[in-house]
Length: 349
Ligand SMILES: [Zn+2]
Image (tube, rainbow, N blue to C red):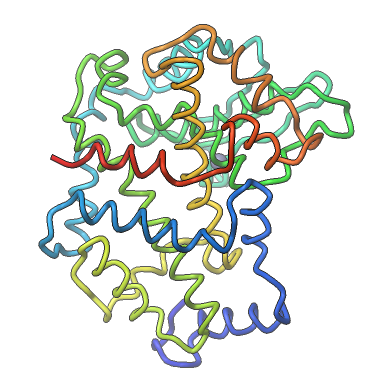
């Protein structure tokens, strides 16, 4: 992807072509953010605020990239042994059941076993539309917290589409990718919460470790979104320098400009600019989760009325209403990063 790291590297040529092809039009991710109520002209400032909050909550010394991953992987190492492959599916079913979502009644089907030639990517999709059925494809040879998190996320997509109640022409994914990815994480994000861990796994990690696991992936997504935004503004920039600058200044990761370690997300070449959807989605779901707790009540350890309550307010519309309108109505105002920043600040010791 980065070739010899020079001006003619495949990545720099790709970005230059993408920017030229748009002829001054805004990137698709900006339109997607706007569709979910995230103002594109505030987004970069919000992303920097997220990185600054992470920096303030963590030690100031520089660590090697691999040690950074080791540190954020602490929660998974502690709790994964409690989740066997068998337990993985049982927990997924039980967690949603405790929230009032009976996966069998919602016609959610799973294809989770390894098979030759199967795609390694986990995803959820419509099976049928009248009645709505969904299929989840993933490959699990083992259990563990990371696989459980992913399975809860994919099931989150299924629970979302199973609650769509509208005319057939509108029975589809909504008009915003950040929103769709955000609500898939509604329940999955709780695996990092000590109260959830104690309830479902019988053991837990300290809050700061759980939050470091929750936000470790998110702050990297934010850094990738900023890398893409900066490269799009200046396609001649050296991505190794942009990346090591961002990860040094905010994540306190020792610069390794000789390693193109930013080049490990397929989205960067598959759909340039797409990482912004994950960053915007993280802001949205933090706001949605906080609003739910405030208006309806806590749900981390189960709440049989949760699905019944969320469905008609957030999930039911499909393509019938603009997502932005649905979200602003749910939040009682415009989207802001305040909830995510407040949640992250709980990490401070
Ligand atoms: Zn997803």
